Image (cartoon, rainbow, N blue to C red):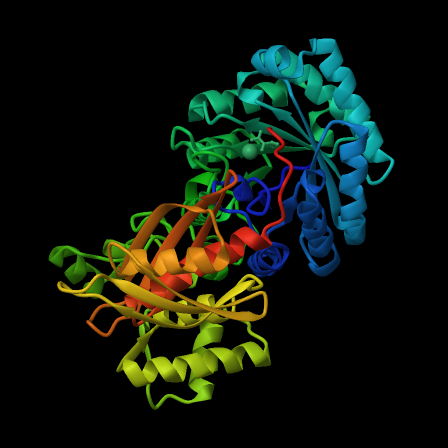
Length: 512
Ligand code: KIV
Ligand code: ZN
């Protein structure tokens, strides 16, 4: 393989990312994210784990049928049934379909999980790659827990799978254990000790348990890795994966030292981050690098002064380079449809005519209550009106009475499976009463794990945004709701979580 300075970006938001607690997505949501990844111009989209469930299978198939441009990967264990099922979903992507098969190689995994000898692992891995080669030459093999694998054995496995036809060999730090110098050493070792290494792309897949996923990935790239596996906002199993936006912006900002680039259209990064937060309900911490709310905010007077004089005094990259526009105050009561649509486009929302219509009606209603509409308000409207799971339950109307003399009481009217139902309930507070009424109407047994309220923008007329996390039958769902009435926002968030719970297809738990 020739020395190329372009790093392949393999996005696994829809597979490893979806393994974050509460991040389950339905097919429509996965497709939305996949379209945004297409805009970002990632090289590979890992769309799911087809054998894990009917829902995963359908999602991978749909992404393979719909997305043009990036390659589409599907994960499978190293056995015939998984591989066959993966290709059944991936075949629609033609030669862009990638079978990604994996098998653990560390002593600890082989002894306790696989109960296999080294010879059996090599044999199984080679057999899996050969099986996949019956479908496509586009095969990736991952040596799970590679970082804790004996290096000579890892080199033997890598050589064997390349010989069997793997075009990409991935070196995962499955448990996020490596430190950068050590990880770079592993990559260098493989480059020097695997005779056929030039016949395959060497990839890395780092988890963030020690907060080192991005640092490890960059160290690996400097040592010769050609593909980085990552997720938007760094979501993923446990502490997450290497964050796409961080690794890509590091490569771009420090090209002077790193000397590598990517094909990512970085101007779509911010919209991708926001879309993922909206869809999953997992918000990024304010101080998160690149996409956090404070990433480009200058608080100290001396910094503000410096930036006003010359941006580069305190800014190593521009907000525009990730698609963050400075114009935060956008629209008001008198703004027309044109301005509204333009602004939505600038924010990265490509909506259908009907969706625009629904969002515009909601915008006008909000503009009647609120003088100034900010970008964040538009995000909330789109999240609330458009990016919604199919609704089994929807809020028709509600009324709440509370105060220091009265027992808080909520009367809630819902549409449940097409039928109107109404009930009143009392509670310890207005939100408690509202949730109790919704639980009765929906017959839900869900336990409330988390409830938080925030204001989307400043001012007493700001919209309130609520997040609700529910647990039922071992599954978690996050719901969000926005409204200028905080109790209504809470009800919407609760109902949204119930709808998500109902819409996400049960997945077979496959432990990686
Ligand atoms: O972390 C891991 O090892 C994985 C592999 C399946 C690539 O996600
Ligand atoms: Zn992983």
